[in-house]
Image 1 (cartoon, rainbow, N blue to C red):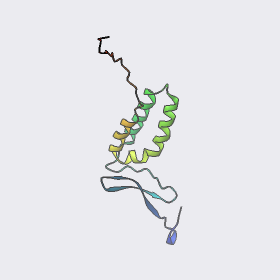
Image 2: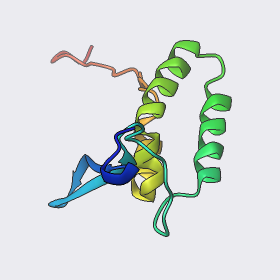
Image 3: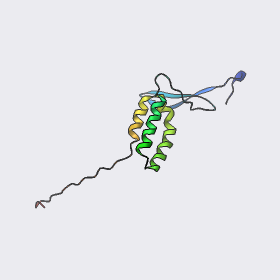
Image 4: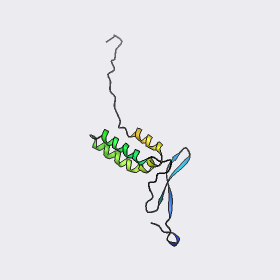
Length: 112
């Protein structure tokens, strides 16, 4: 931890992303720059935990997907806690790719 004059600790603001021209920052001490804090506009941590449990339950037979999910989730968790819009977006992109196949009957000029 960096100490300032007379033993005070210093803090810094870290930019995390830009939203419609407005920069968003995480406040934190130099020793722990990504401190999770939930303000009045933040996401309820219980909602985030329920979302994680839902993803784990839904994809319990896909260990590689769950490993990737947890790695990404740990990186974006502070932002998800700061803004409910980010959690809604993350819920959409966490859905694994799906492939829909169907048969298309082709008919040539002779009707075959």
